[in-house]
Amino acid sequence: FVVWRTRMERSDCSFSDGAPISSVLPGNRQSGSGLLDRVIFAGYRAGDYVDAIRCMDLLTFLVPGSDGSCRALLEAQACGVPAVVSRRGALPEIVIDGETGLVVEEEIGALVDAWRSLLSRPGRRARMAAAAHARARTAFAPERLASEVDAFYRELL
Image 1: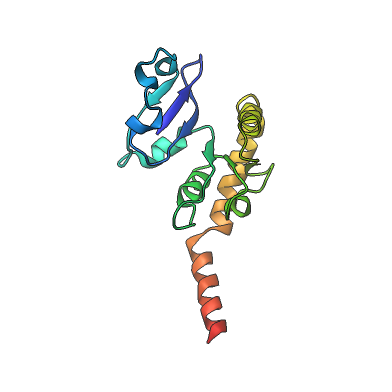
Image 2: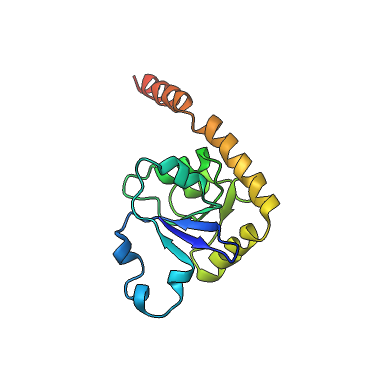
């Protein structure tokens, strides 16, 4: 996890790509870029994983991953964290644009605009967080998914 800190010393955005921390911003840790004043290198989280997710104000998820399950995105939504996602794979099916997060183009300007939009409007972010949590509890509940998979296989038989 890499947690961005604001002047108020609270996290506004967290990023995790599963890469070792040393590879997240190669060369920048000592480059005088000022990143160490604004970024917390929290490392891999295990025992406090859910608490770490709940500390996030938003999640940015641009690539569905190798298995396509988008598990980290689903976990963040279950914890009530709105997301900024790209249009790749299942991401725009999981995030309802403008309701549970934002679906944007993979361009730095679009990402920055989305981050600013959510981080500067805590009320909007809170509404999206509540909607993300509610959607995760209904649309992605394990019982519902198991029932749908079971129905699919029964239809094939």
